[in-house]
Length: 382
Image (cartoon, rainbow, N blue to C red; front, top):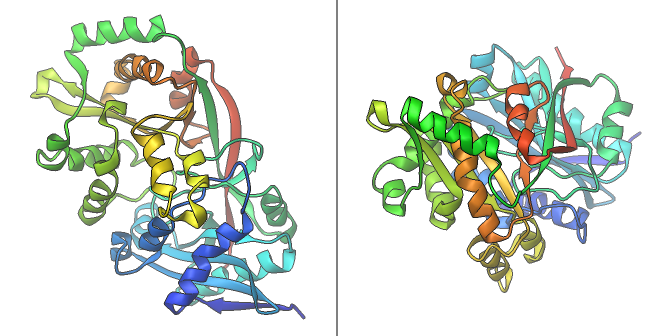
């Protein structure tokens, strides 16, 4: 008989323990990018996260001899299920000690919750939407994590294999890109041609345009279109978009964000690139995800003063009809000189589906090295 007790998160104290467990498990880890406690609290709180307009969720803690030894979130994204014609319950925020009984009990809790709700499969790790980290790290455990992705110990995927019934549903890859001394000629030449032939141009936004001119919303509307075909994607709602604009853009360095516009269509927004200085080392210095007393200073040094050698390429999207025109070259021709100016040595791509060759082909001139792999698993529970 298992000695593991599963406890549903029902109180503020329980939720605090749920969030705090990650800091305990990964304390001192040199690769993990711990989230800010306040961000985790906002994401997991039903009255704060707009994703609960179309999602349902329960959180579970695993206890052994009264001590927390694991956690997991069970999430049903009704909008995604409708779009992809699925009956999936997602598991996310999964962490556990190296004890197969713990991981088994946690995933069983997700399965039971899914069955109660009429679901027929469990899939994950996934969050509420694509804006949350997804995919369990399966290779690259000695590589620096990012704030937008999951870092986990190497025993996690070993547990998935041992438990049985779990199959590959989707694999992601991530690349390390060298920042050259100048924008490669391949990018600059194509960018010049694209500007002349198609009247496309790259430009920067101002804070006023983002918050008062509606560009914040336009950026996420574009993401809804360009990412609509990707694995498990569900369209961001108006309330979610409003949340993300208010949450992230007040602190964003707009010099590292580029938009592409079509001069033939009244400067219609047709592409974007949202990149940020890596915050991993700064987040590691925020004690248990707190901004105070000194966490805010480390984040400020990274965001405003670019005290990091790494730049994270969070979101790059171009409307389908403009991809074959080479519009993405405008992005790189614009951003690479800025990376050089700020002293970035290398870039980190966001997760890419392993089959997305069109995305991977654009990194060619930047000497890409695939250095991480991650997987989403699926299990039938009908």
